[in-house]
Image (cartoon, rainbow over the protein chains, first blue to last red):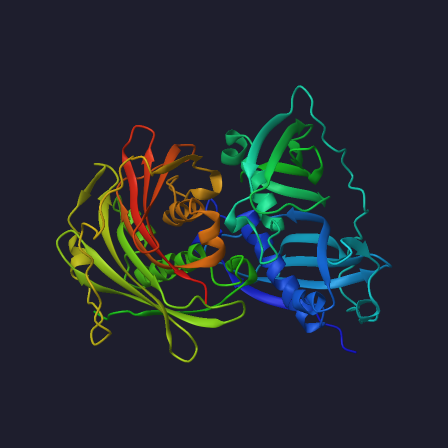
Length: 251
Length: 251
């Protein structure tokens, strides 16, 4: 069986840039989602292929590093491919390259398979386990299941805000899209950071799903070295997303 | 001088669809904004061309009609070009075509030029007035300045909600993006309409700008025939956007 590496060319549109006229992190993550889906379709393991046997993909870990966010009109290449498989997990790498080959951003991610009838995670089925992975590419990290940052709990220096999951936050399966969480998380960052700094790293640990019209609590706390810990939870305290963001001064 | 018609090909990405797996209206409007900007660049009247002489484009009217919203993976063509000019206004048409040429959506729009130093609208400068318009195309409506629906005012059957302009709602000029207003306006529609109907027409009359962290009031009122009147205003009551949306049953 062949292996597949997905390479997509994206030219940055105006609405994909932020107020600094640079590619916005949610737009980059949207591309990553799109290219990952196209790669999965080639492998016969797309969303609809899994839905046919009552299974679904769940993103559980993602670590994104942005070295330089490209600007309006730049043409870039996004490359993604599966890097490893274990009983329960499949690992996927992403690389964003400028047209001269410079590495602009990179990400590693971990996915599991969910049984939509039994409402539980299951081991990867044989038709996924037997797939051929690409070889000879840049070695990629397998993220540890537990992230390298502590879970944020409510404390004196934790800010909290409330948000409702909206219509354009959800997917066709009525669940909140992963990128919607990231947008909410970034919106909770203090104004002076958004204005004067740029996102350099985002480490995500997805814990549970949420749905349209759910109320979410967004918690944020500054930590050492221009970093923030984030926690998105249901009103009953159940964790939806734990995260850490790292920010650098604007160049 | 040559005239320019902009034709862009877009293939619908997953995140550009809504929970019905059809192209979301904000995604379509983002494309329209992008293609209009590319057409303006060819004419030498792009955002940066105008900024150089302390001018800026302001969208004042837009009427969008959606006949069929395409689905994931469909490749469509968006065509846009200026249709007419008057002392203060330039008119622009949009057509969205399926790959077999079927008209999927169409829009007419009216733009004016704003002097960013004097903070006022000005007549179109000679370098815009002298441009050559494309001829021999589908005739297009010049929208009347005043829309064909009444301005919504607060009444017993008006629902109201409050929203803050967020970081990803603003452009590089720190103003709220036109598409962000449309997203807010659509989010204020009742859940059963969003779930069971689809947007067929949107008529917009932009009245004033807003900025990051501004608080906006969103007003909505149902009117005859599956239509809604919308009003977005500043907390002091100044109108930001008046609109009417028309909805049809899902097919």
